[in-house]
Length: 422
Image (cartoon, rainbow, N blue to C red; front, side):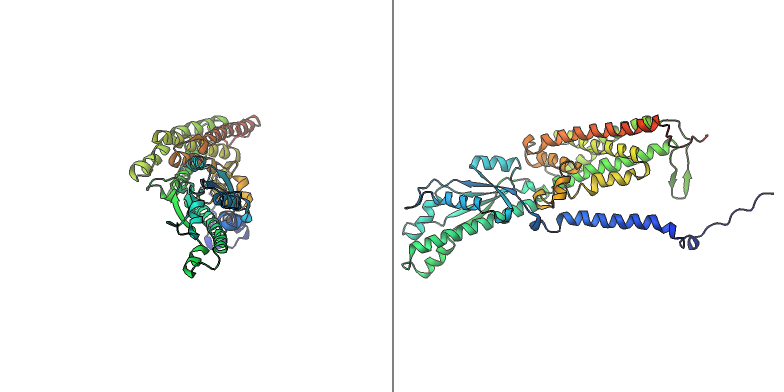
């Protein structure tokens, strides 16, 4: 006689088992805690963490020094700004106007403060009848470095310019004495007009400097999700994983194949499919949505190589770690990558832990290259050269790590599953 079937379990019975709750509860809680700490820790207080934001400082003033002084007023202003640490928030770079423009155009500085030619003559004329215009100091922004980074630089430079204006005002008020009228003394108290201009314009379809970040995120997601989809699809097709769609469940016959050959197959498919996915990302962003991009062929090649590097990394991690590989690769490429990318919050405005991660986290390397292509005329010194180098390093590491681990497993005879008959 056939043995009676075991009674079917119910949710009401199983939900009372503490061990069933343990692993999901611990993992979910840890993930929620880590994600909150990592993401919010990088952006919660950028002004507090801000340190050494690179800003150009230019003195174009060619006027003669006032009587009894060694330097003209432009030199006095820039020297005072450069020597005032201001809590170390700015890294003032004393440059010529041409040098400052070059660093704005290559994304090396987040902004600039420019004292114009004739500044000394315009300021000293305020206490005489020769005054014809109000002296100005120009603040230049760099929206290609991101809206937040450019805004932080603008705040710092504007504050420095107003402090310089008030300092000059005290000198002018003292020299004018009591001869001037209350209206003139009010003007002399803060004599310099601070003008803000765009130092390196970007296109109107550039998301205020954020398209580089979101485009990079798309490339990382294309590589990450594509790599996992390919990995799961190959495992299902070869009979090493179940295929379940809705109420339908199938299990294909297991194909005898070792880990190394499986990884080779997945990486080969990743290269082919990534060519399609990265091309579609470019098509959607540039052609359909009209994103500003002046170097489309280069952006297409870079997009493919960037997404491929991520996809190969995902395959290597999955091959090495098995079932938890997707979680590990999520942390490597996304969880730790987003707050350390420097694409939305400048690296100078995040805690030191994220600056450390930025030296090797993939998203930072890719965002520098995308930003250089989209906003800085694809200049190598704008971050593109380093990005290409890091992509090559990433691909090499993925290949070495992935095949080293699968080779080791194969030599040890660690098969994935016992083959099942057709």
